[in-house]
Amino acid sequence: MRYCVIMCGGVGSRFWPSSREERPKQFLDFFGSGRSLLQMTFDRVLELVPAERILLLTNKRYAPLIREQLPEIPAENILLEPARRNTAPCICWAAHHIAALDPEGSMVVLPSDHLVLKEKAFHESLRRGFEFVENADRLLTLGIRPSSPHTGYGYIQQDAPVESAEGFYKVKSFTEKPNAELAKVFLASGEFYWNAGIFLWKAKSVLEAFNRYDPETAAVFNRGNSDYGTPRESAFIDANYSSAPSNSIDYAIMEKADNVYVETVDIGWSDLGSWKALYDISPRDEHGNVTQNCRLIQQDCENTVFAISDREKIVVAKGLKDYIIADTGRALLIYPVADEQKIRQIVNDVKDRFGEEYV
Image (cartoon, rainbow, N blue to C red; front, side, top):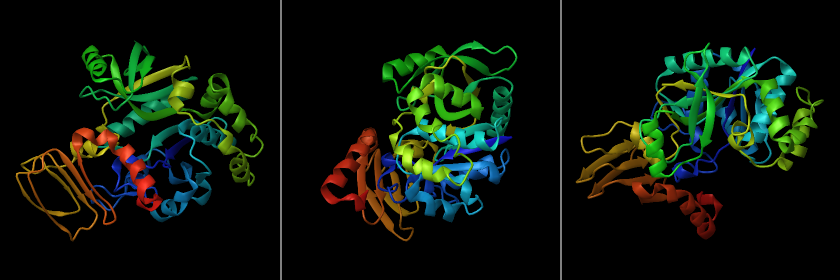
């Protein structure tokens, strides 16, 4: 059977102050649709995987938010991490859990906070991806054809095409967030794709890869083989999860394995990783300004994001160009778009000076 794993334990600090530790961006409704990014991800995958086979991996502190936003998910499908350890331990645990329920089960792994505008293409891509990994011992990632030399994404270089599957290629290399000049070379070559962080494989295939390429993580979770799928699973995870090394699935497995493939797709994808990413996909007025949840009177403002948590607040601004204005009531950010990569450090500074309640 087919399963879906939605990873929803991140903090989203580049979206501060709207995204905070107590309610990160995956739980926010950025578009006024009445559905958060997590709920939109859940809705999107339902056509392919029923709710009873969708697993949510998250930090323990977000369990109440998940139950509030997705009450249709069975309680036993919410796997609660006692500590943050990046994506490799998260995926290793999920694969063990699925393998205990269904030794031949296949799985798609999705981030909870991405945007997909072409849902039909997304569904078709996942259907083809499931078939691809179910017929052989393969690890598959989705590659997005780049539209710009973006330096905030990882890149996947394609190798030889798979003769029996159009749009699938052996992976030649991964590159993590290149500099601007290298990103331009990647774009011009036509061989590179953005790494969407969406993966498909059989549970047993990725567990075999952990044993071979990341034995330290594998050793931690292999100790619980008799506990997965039983009432003892949660206690085992609570006692052992924190001892797993903090590592991404890309570094742990994908960059090392020899059975890694990429499916090249056009699904209208954005990782919504920053205010600039939100700006790029949002409707704008005739001056290039984006408003989120606010009423705006502006004079000579251009290419600026106004994101206000209070829908009743009126914002009056003059002379702002290429800025982020984000107001949550307790915190106000006024920051140049060009410097948005520094927001993570700003969050640390706020935490150090004013306390955790502001982040």
